[in-house]
Length: 191
Image 1: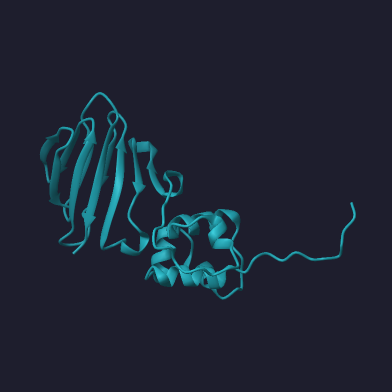
Image 2: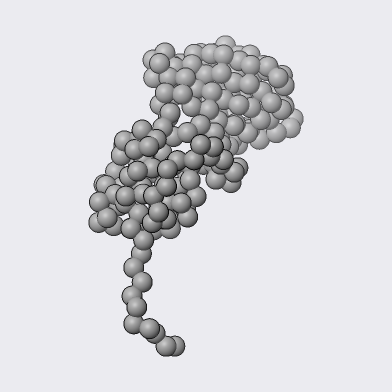
């Protein structure tokens, strides 16, 4: 194999990553939590002291709502007026052991303030939550199937199209109470 003597260097993504993070109003801590990448690694990447692995780049791109190509691009572009995320680009939180899948629909810069998800529960699946921060509330709109919401021992069954609103600063759970897969939109508001 013949070589040309030109050494290829990996793209320096630090400036792009920092601009995307700041444009979304995210701190290093925010992005670290959203992407599951340590704050020190993020800092090293932004200072061009390290380049991310493909796995880290994928997690960062998902957390920022961009493609890996955009993150690795050496061009720093202004944010689009309309940015479309395809379903496969939206991060998910699988709870395989409990029979649920949460697809994150809201932007990461609103995490901890206002969040929304698509919740899918397998038959018998349950999303059990510890109390969120004081004053937090959830709004669950059932799109398909049957679900049951429980807060502090009180249970309410929902039919398709119904919305349950309840305090999320108490122990609460959402259970598939039907015989088919159930799907809902879940909005969490932190106060």
